[in-house]
Every structure is written in structure tokens, then in C-alpha cells.
Amino acid sequence: MIELLISISVFAVIVAVVSGVFITSLRSNRTSLALISANSDGQLAMEQMTRMIRKGQNFTVEEVDANNDFTPDYNELKYKCLRFRYEYAGKFITYRWNKDGKKLEASIVDSDPLNCNGSGGNGTEVFNEIVSENLRVDFANFRIVGQGGSFPLITIVLRVGAKNTLVTSGGQAFINLQTSVSPRNDDRY
Image (cartoon, rainbow, N blue to C red; front, side):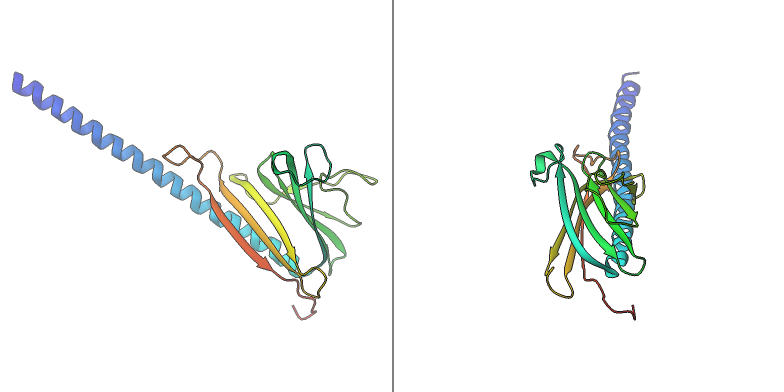
């Protein structure tokens, strides 16, 4: 009887250890799949933005803080925008990172765009999310180099992750993505 109790106890300990390892590997697998999906969604969003930027002109970057004034204090930053005129459709495009919503948004309007927060002028600009609902954009940055020249270089930096996914250590899982693109002021493209 004692031998049976000892063998059942040893078996229970082994099952508990194996179960813990199995559960940890399942969590790691889910996190890996979520990061692969986030990477794919983030790259797709960047590809869509670069296609439009290649046909753009008159690029500007704008930052708006929570008080709707234009100060680059990251702690109070609410929106960061890249604005430009889409040359071949005569439209104005704004890509905006919404810090509060952790999402990337876009607006396409016929006339000069409004403020980065979507208000001002004679109306309200409508921004639509351009990434999947499962993608969290923790950070976005837009930089313009060489604005005075014919071909400015626009750099887009995104820090993306999957919503509701935690790494086993308790931190957030994320991926940094970056691309640079120059507009093509040539009708052949």
C-alpha cells in the first residue's frame, strides 16, 4: 500500500511538471503566432503607405499633444501625422498615429487637410484605421529628410504587437518595423 501511494505521488509530480512545460510551450506558441501575424499586418500597412507616398508631394509632419497645441512633448503626445498631396488623384492624404487608441489611421480628402487632430477649418476630417483590429501600434514616427530637394526621403518607423498578447515573462510582445521611401515624380511609375 505504501509503495502504491509513493508511486501515485511520484506520478502526480511528474504530470504536474510536464503539464507546466506543456502550458508554457502553448503560451509561447500563441505569442509567436501573434507576433508573426502582427509583423505581417504591420508590413502590409507600411507597403500600402509607401505606395501612396511614391506618388505624393508636399510632405509635412505634424505632432499634436493632448492640449491640441503643437508641441513635441511625448508624454502629452496624442497624434503624430504625415500629410501630403497625392499627385495623381488630386487628393490630400494624412497618415496618423493615434497614441491613445494604439492604432494607425488614414484620411483622404479633396481639399487642404485640417489639423492633425481632425478638426479646424470648415469641417471635420474622418480618419479610418488602416491596420487589422488585432494589431496594436505602440509607436509610430514619420521623418522627412531633404524636403527642399526633388526627392525627399520619408522614413516610417512602427512598433507593432498583437492586442491582448503577453510574453511569458509578463512584458508586451512587439516588433520594430522601419522603411524609407522617396516619391517618384515620374509618370512612368
